[in-house]
Image (cartoon, rainbow, N blue to C red; front, top):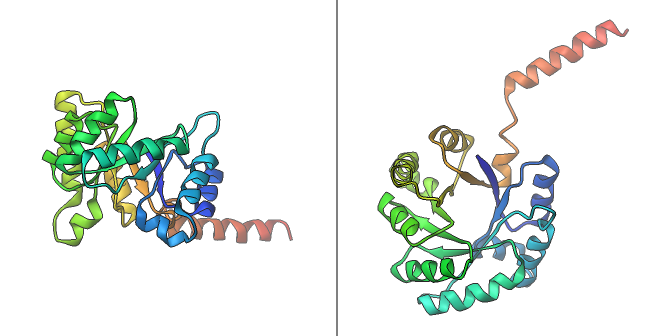
Length: 218
């Protein structure tokens, strides 16, 4: 499973790169607004930071309401870097835009998906990624991971190439369940990525080894 970082913060992106855990970046208007300044320059810098020998995808979101507006925005955003993936809302107009952009050989990420049928429609439109939001479903007493399982079954049934990108991850268990189900990607806040390697028994074991080593070297 690939790890994408859900952020627009340059320091977090750099730290994830140093850990060797950066397969992609997802952004949205909320994340960009938290960084302040010119959002366009921020987005361009993110694309530059991760554009190496194997550039990683960077999802940038359109805000138009009609397919024509989305397509025009997508063409503008695509100039930020060859690794740009266009985030499209899961609406009827969004599906039209997704198909049009796919025909233009542009990568797309259909976002704000909350049902398996929405995911199926996005896949039929040719989306590169589909982003189901598990945390938001959990927040209204629905089982977000059940949605991932349903999408996985549907995509496998019909051999869709669209990748399942699990979004709105709120805790390490969401990452674990996504991996067990077979999701292609999880887009994870930096705070949660930093928690994945931690376990209290690891800390206890290291402390015991350190104590015993100190006794050997006195």
